[in-house]
Length: 344
Image (cartoon, rainbow, N blue to C red; front, side, top):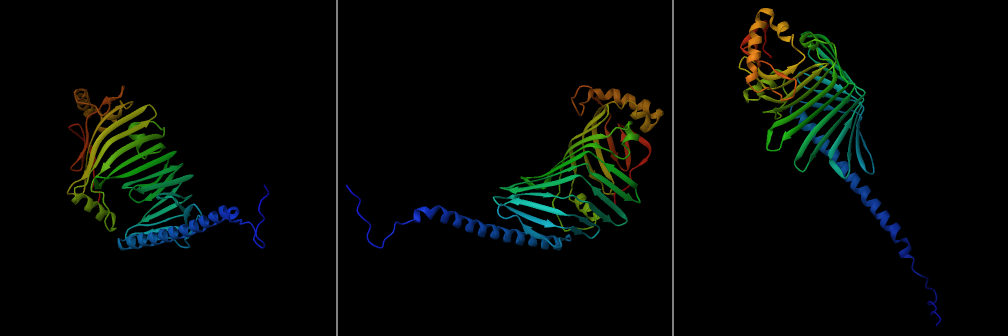
């Protein structure tokens, strides 16, 4: 049977042939519109946040800011990021902040540095080979993390003199308590770090590895004020720090502790640490002198009956270390010649 001829002047429809290309073009236009809408919201949100920060006493500046990243990312670049507080001025740059369009609640920032901080006559300079910050704020979950490779801090202060603080790597994590916005969990890890005074305190010249896990109460944000005002607000509110773990390793020496830290009415630190250690047998004699060391030795031997800060094999319990009323006490014995001054 032969096919019927098409009517004169009528051609076969080719809409089916072009339909996929039309759909792709519409999707591209829609995605482009969505990207620019999201970009506008990000810029508006950033401007609003900077305005709110300025009202709280923290003035952020990002001259020559650019926003790019089409089609899948939002990239914000600052040649230099500045912060001005009543008592602190800081500059950092250049800075790149990135968020995926399909996951705007996860922000990653990276900067080659350096960081410069001026607080009165004190000055801090920081450099690193890599620094990244990750902030997640989605579905009621908030957390932040910082990773720095080969960081080096240089502090020039009249109180301490010049300090050079290098490390191989530093990681820090912050997570507000979902059930209590005034409480935050903090974790800090430093590997291959030079810690001032530690060589003289426990011996050896090896770099140290430090691991701290703590909970800070009354850690909510208020308008910026000089540091003494911030500390006083925290003290009056009943803020304290609970150390779930302090783990220090330096060559063959190791100390593991738990404890608390607060500030008393005279603005002096108040602290207690329960610790266990190995490799620091000569520490007590160096700290309190040979005469007091005999009494401390008796306390140390009696401490075996109380729980140690760590169940690790090889760690021996130490007398509790306390800071109270401006004194440093090891067990019941005050360390002679040491007075802890007020913080502010």
